[in-house]
Image (tube, rainbow, N blue to C red; front, side):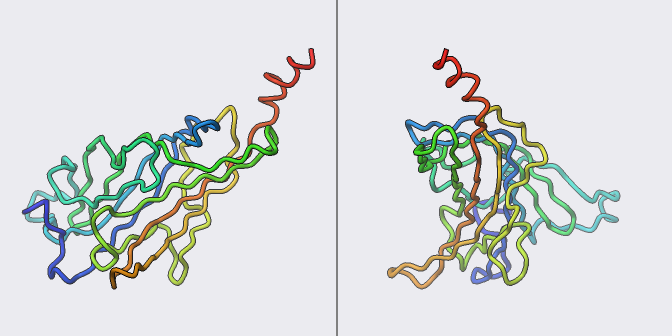
Length: 218
């Protein structure tokens, strides 16, 4: 097993990689520096044909947890990062199922660039994006998809899992759609793919009314 080699039978085969974000915490939205800081789980799954086995030949074992740095992983990065940390730094264990399915759900804190318009502050809504894609592989090598994508559509209305989201004291999350983008460049024939997660949020007006506006009036 060579963890540096994409797990496909033929080098011309495309490997499908599915991703999804689980938003744990909206840590900060920095108006001055135009940066959003989030605590995320970057959920990823793919099939590795080299990691299949027959459970009855191995004591009925159907699933294993292995160090993720011992197997091939897609190099999914945040393109619009604001601090130079493109990749997940914590190499948590991956879950491997006997059919060859690999699931990897590393947590990470990301700082992403975000255009913020404060014209209507503190009664404003903002939309920040998180643009994820493969750093090395084009669309002919890695077919990047959203886990909840439906056939014939490149948009997922609820693209971010908010089931374990810690409520922010400053912002309400309104919408979290995700869009799969496919771009071609004049240099190359192959497509370049990304999944862009849009986080639309509304500022909690009461927070600023109590802490800023009322004290100024007094």
